Image 1 (cartoon, rainbow, N blue to C red):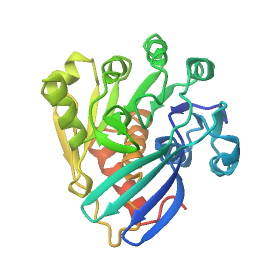
Image 2: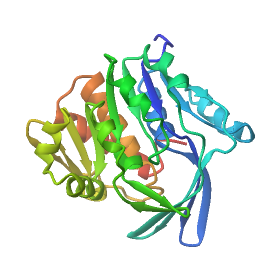
Image 3: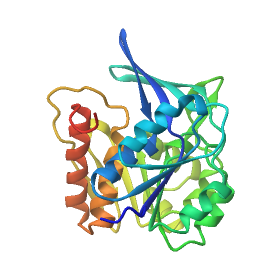
Image 4: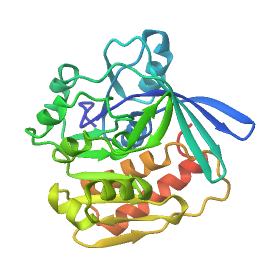
Amino acid sequence: MSNTPKIAIIGSATIDKNVKGSRSIRKIGGTVTYAGITFQKHGLPTVIVSNIAPQDSGLLRTLRQQGLTVCSSPTEVTTSFVNHNDGDDRWQEMNSKASPITVDQSQSIIEKVDHVHLGPLHPSDIEPELFLLLGKQPCFVSLDVQGYVREINHGQVRLKVSETLHKVLFSVQVIKADHLELDAILQFYQMDCKTLKEFYGLRELVITKGDEGGYIMADEKVSFEAKPVPRIIDTTGAGDIFFAAYLIYRFHKHRNISESSQYAASIAARYVAGQYIP
C-alpha cells in the first residue's frame, strides 16, 4: 500500500472533556480524529490539516501513532470542548479556539489528494477563501455540516445556521447532518430536502438520527437502521465515524447506498460499544 495520502481532512483536532453524570474523561476529538482514524484503519492513507498548539504536542503524537500524517500550523491554543451527556440531554461548551486553517497551509495538500473531507467545528474554523479553491479542484469533497450550524456565544454552543454555509455547499458533493441540523438548514433556506440537493448540486445527503438510524437522500430516499449496542460506552464522535465509514464504502469501494449505510451503522455501533477506537 502506498503511503501517499489519498484523503485530506481539514478542521480542528480537539482536546475534549466528556462529562456523563458524575464522571468525566479527557480525550482527543474532532472530526479529523474520528474520521481520520476510520479512513486510516481502512487502508486509505490520510493527512490531517489542523492547528495544534506546541504545549499539546501529545495530541500530535497520538494521531501519528494511528498512522496519520498531520500538518499543523502555529496557534496559541488548541480547540477544546466540554461535552455534557445527561441521558437525552446533551450540550456543549467551547473553552478555547485554535487559529483558523488557511489556504496557504492547505493548498499544496488539496492539490495532491483524491478526496477532501471538511470537518470544521465552528464557523471560523476554516478560512472561507479555501472553499473557492476547492471549487476549482477535481477532487471529491465531503462535508460534515456541524461547524456551520453552530453559534458560539460566551463559550456556549447553540444551534444556528451560519451565513458561511452557503459558500461551502457550492464546493462539496456529499454532506452529512443530523436530523436537527438538517431541519435548521431547511428552515433557514426555506427549502425542502430535494430542493436543497438540486440547488447546490449535491450528490447525496447523509442524515443521521442516533439510535433511530437515518436515511440517505440521493436520487431517492434510502433509510437505514441503527445497529443494536448492548452497552453504550461513548457516543461522542459516532456520527463522524458513521460518515467516514459510509464514504469509504460508497465512494472508495463503490458499493450501493443500502450496503454502505448498513456497513457504516455497524462500524458506528462498534465504536459506541467501545470496540473500535482504543
